[in-house]
Length: 291
Image 1: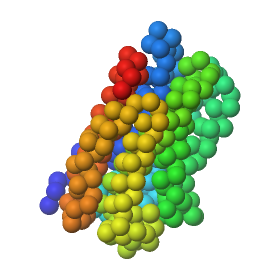
Image 2 (image 1 turned 45 degrees about the vertical axis):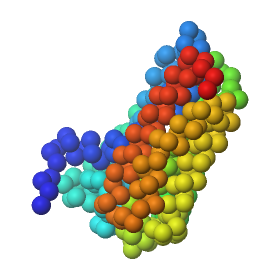
Image 3 (image 1 turned 30 degrees about the horizontal axis):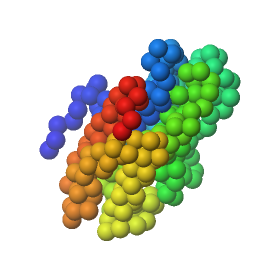
Image 4 (image 1 turned 135 degrees about the vertical axis):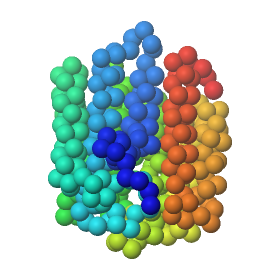
């Protein structure tokens, strides 16, 4: 029997560190679009705080909501606080609220320094994070999770991070927002593909669960192609080709005969690739390398 993680480690695990690239990469890419000498570092840090706090808050909210519904009773993924019964459900819910509060506070400060319309965007992001698996009709249970991560951890995070630098929109930020959005969706598909059988048995109808284990890998493949097309659209075709190569280990695992826990490395591969691509794009953008 696996030994239960300690008091601090259990909270770190439940924050799902491997999903954090979905929050960091779009901010880094959006900021990298700006010439280094003109970057507003204060606004950049606030964007990163908002993104990370929103991601962690959403992860804790999912842990709480899935746990009290019993969905995680048949989950084969990483450690969950609520389902493990090691932490009271109310404490997990309060941790989610605290994370959302931090995101909201940083967002308000950012809006006061830039534009107040960001408050509305931030409010919808927090609501989307909670109702992903929370509330009476969680949209994540009906196959709309990809839309949430694509919009908020792709378009909004990337375009928004570029916008708050000098309050102007960059055409390339939209292409790169689509690219990071597909990266975030690939990360989600790596998670959902692993949980297909558990989600189907618990009534959680993610897109992967609707398509079943045999067809769901094509969702992952579509996300990778989306990354390539969007990066190429931003003018960096070579980086797009590199993206395909970096995703090969995850793609091969997706189309393998493995199931359940055997697919756990797929999340690691996808998160690692997202970080590598984010770093590569940042270097290319900062040094204005035309590849």
